[in-house]
Length: 292
Image (cartoon, rainbow, N blue to C red):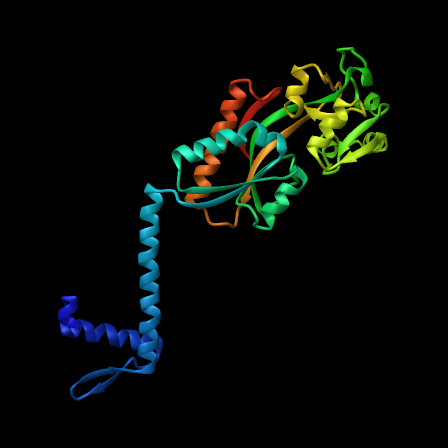
């Protein structure tokens, strides 16, 4: 053993003795013609091999992690976000990290952070999520909210409309809800908006269809109905009440160990969001990109 390790025999004997003292058990049976490991010695040897194997695997993975991104990353996003940055994100991953498998799941902001807490996704992008000290949140952008519908529902006037005035109109709300609650804390006004909502939907496509058919108006960002605003099917009026904006956050669990796959995907989301906003492709939005 000493020859294999390139050290003096006395050094090996000394280390074995110290180890036996520390563990308070004999690791070898001393015999006239050498030593034989005890059951405790064999057990220690087995554990030691596992530790050394794990260390070698860790070294290998860290080295690979610096040169190659491979594996899977799962992300949840609302419909609007997927529409604006989903394709650029998929394109960037395919070009830069071809061995990274992407799972992109559409989810309302109200449920997106539940998917993260349940570890069904690695990253989530959502609007106005509730505070949770288990989740690291990074603000990506802020966008203005509008009263959206057909001109014959709330008139052709371009003057801002208040939430109180909007509550007097037929209102359509997404069932995922908490949208209005993320914008204002005035209980009486929330009650009026809720009472005015004669249609509640759990589908973005159905909501847009209801708006196009004049069934009511809703509180929404321009990005949700940008195509319908450009072709004149719908119109948008500013909200006169203060604080009519919502914030988009990127979130991940603080307790999850960081992985290269999560890091590069997070950086791509930041980069693409900032680019889309800078190019004016995200209507009525301003980039934030700050930690929370």
